[in-house]
Length: 597
Image (cartoon, rainbow, N blue to C red; front, side, top):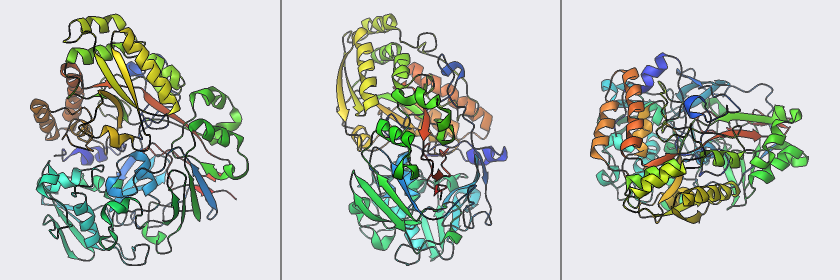
């Protein structure tokens, strides 16, 4: 897959960069689906928070030095507790492409590059393990990185350039199915797993050179001036060649970050303690202020909210990565002035969709009928109203799309409750006026209610709905199988860095197990159009072309329903400092968290 080479450079020239981060976490009724925004796609009411894209600039070698810039009032030491519903789905960074997984990875993993927080809403792309954000040559086809002195694994052995090379090579292995694929495709071809099978049979990748223990050279097939942004993704965090246990690495990773995993009881708890070989002088990104982390799993959003509202005992030093205030507590929390200092609000930067499985739902009129019957307003009400969810109408997110242009193809603004009569008309014109839709959903309390709303609306139009609850921890694994038995299912996605080329060509890109093309859309004409846009040198023209293609895809193919965009309202304990919702991952960042004394 090509990425239009001027994307990051051109945006940086303007001094502002909008960031999000791939998959959101399984429509949990927490920051999972994206959110926020008004205008033509915002529904009838304004959201509870205004999204301001973070400022991102390109850092220097000096910016890449540690330690991280501390938040105001920081205190070191103590134990912080993170409470959430689900265990971390994948600990192997190569399998991590969901925001909650890559966010957790900041505690134990490190990448070549990363985002340094300068101040709230102000970030720099810097070297993490590397001395700087990388040096391009040959027009952007070649990228060279140099590792910092003193970066070590948890056993004290140095991190080497061969570890970096091995990290990328292992992502080609058949068992790696969930992580990002940009770098792999740039080094080989779109079908990267056909081009190379990984390093385990002894064959190495010639396109990555390691002239010495500190230097790594990537040689891409085509120019990629924004490659240093790709290397900041959690899915490319470094894995040690000497400790790679293949599939088993997902259960017990080796740390390069500030903490090591001391204990892990799956689906119940995890404890982290300091990594004695992590040197803050080498790390400009992670503050690592608490001595210990305790992660508690198995708590629903209502339980978490009630505990954080009560703010007693150990819960004073607790927070949550992604559990938003549930609908039944939202108005109480928003109306309680005493909770305001502990309430974080943020519309989501993600795109949020219900994908049709095009291998099964082949008639476009049926897909269009579902769109017209879709009960957007009722879903919004179940989620807590306009303060908890906005109602977009486009594939690209208006909060994070430069040159955004609204359209409303299915009349959602005029009839947010759905247009049952229009849906019936389309079904009457279809190949099957009384179709059956198998709807798979993430089994959470909120999604159980949403599923009832969807089922009732579609059945009013004459569509029989068979519901299939999926395990919350492995939701994406289930819908990610090409040969699944579902017709419709939710999926969240965000631009990996500021370019439409990290949205459209991904969610409508290669089809395969674990690939984010959940609709299984394969269209040669569409692929050509996307490639043409990515090759454009004029940024404004490209942005306009992505928006035009957005509408054309829905009009001519209709591979999905544009769903509600969540707005995060998240509490933390009174003795937790530095809590912020990260603008990239849309979950609370661990990098600035500290325990107040």
